[in-house]
Every structure is written in C-alpha cells, then in structure tokens.
Image (cartoon, rainbow, N blue to C red; front, side):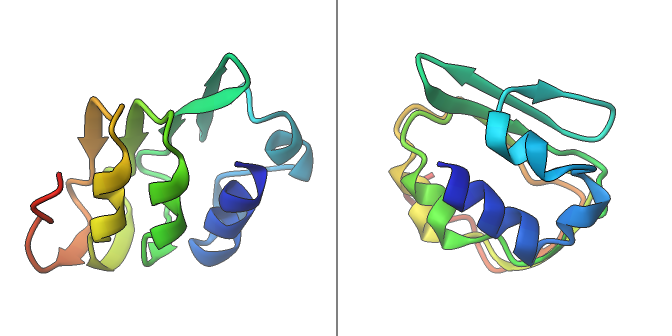
Length: 109
C-alpha cells in the first residue's frame, strides 16, 4: 500500500498535499490537505479534495482492495478513469467531480 501511495504522490503533484515523507510512512494521517485512514493494517480511505493534484489517476490504485473511500474531487486530474478502480469491491464512495477527466465511467464502477 505504501508503494502505491508513493506512486500517487510522485505522479500527481504530491508535494502540494504531503508536507513530509513521514506521512507516507504512517498512512494514518489527517491534516488540512490530506487524509488517509487505516483499519486493521489496511488503507481504507484516501481523501484529497481540492489539493491541486495534477496528472492521471494511477491504475495501481485498483490494487487497494480494502479501500472504502476515494476522494479526488476538485483537482486538475486528466485522462480517463482507470477501469482497474472497478477492482475495488469495498469501495462505497468515489468522488472525482470537478476534474478534467475524459471518457466514460467504467462499467465496473
């Protein structure tokens, strides 16, 4: 999970939402700009609205099988919504509004 969050950080202008690499290490943080929650040693929530995330959504997020909430609303993400997010069988909330995404919503979602 940590490697996937590091990839997200590197590919989406993460220096704007994580002030320290220590945040990645703990993966259980709540701040003004980023919120990650864990339960039973698994990442369950990634909440990064209005954080100037730019680039594409990494397909690797589809490997976070315990994820319940993924919120990237109000950023400048572009490209298509990865169909791999359809692998997130526990996902209850997906917020991608107010970005520059293109294409259709994958059937898996």
